[in-house]
Image (cartoon, rainbow, N blue to C red; front, side, top):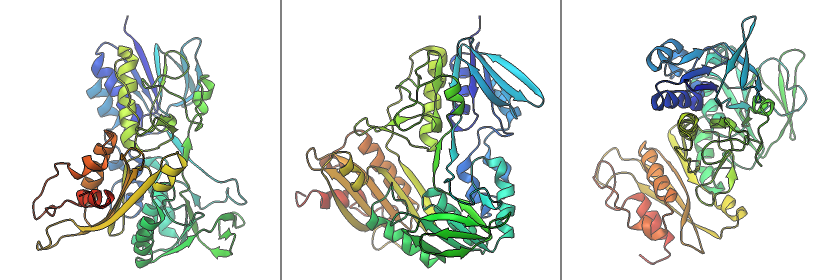
Length: 449
């Protein structure tokens, strides 16, 4: 009898899981359930649609439901909201139009993703306070932005910074509020974040750092934002304070949550309930550096977690997930901003003895025209000499290559010596003879090289 695999959620993890299950078991009955109209969608692209870089919101989905169903031979159910899971009878109940539909499963993969955090403060339910989650909502969000003249962005994380740039591209007055002393407070050290502050200010973003938002004003629609320091008039507010795992359905299924309040999974993406897997932003993961449990809501690990869950749903314990470093990159006006591993502050909190080196380098040979520059910060552990974090900020897209090389090395436990002797490429148009990462390792070696 064909194995029945049901996947709830058709974002990065869910679509990946369904496709992998089908590839490894051509006879399986694979059903992909999505409460919205799009599958294989890319929420990270929403700010770029709002700002006009992406012209068609439909491009934020890789496949149409019809293409995915036809090419993968998967039963794709869109506009179908999973409302309950019966773990004893192995049933998923969905609401599809006016009907409640039941799906049987031998293996269930929960990939319900994450949902935006909305602080429980006065006025947070006013119209005009907006959040980003699913791409099919992007046209409405762009319309809301176009109607406004003064816009507040609450939160200085990746989404907040990308929104600030998008809104400035539309000619809006933008105020960015971050309650911590610097933007990207959990992923960058303060001295590196200052480079981002300068770029934001240079491009007309009004920074309100270390300023907590305590409420919103308005009768029916938001008209003002209240902070610990004062009151500001606004027409719209975009919330970018982060996301939390959407575990409502997982709890109905009876699975255990981890210490981060995401679904607890092991290296096979198995939950605490036999036959149920979880993947993507709904699931807890762990650091590749020391195995510590953590929550990271990023598309690349979500895709890989989906691959592991889909494979194991049809093959048993076939693939293992190794954990994450939290490697990420974004663009802030004319800067590319990237990081991987631990910040110095985070490393200290986790019990390491961190020390860091920061260098500014050219991304081409000094004589080659049109070269850019990058500031690189490497962090190592005093006791082991292992490099445990990297941050790179620069004007050149090569920043992406720098952070990817650093992530590959850090993921394999590379030491400062390993970084220094890494056989990285050289060509005048692409790198100086002393690659920036090697220069940073040289400084980090404290005179050894």
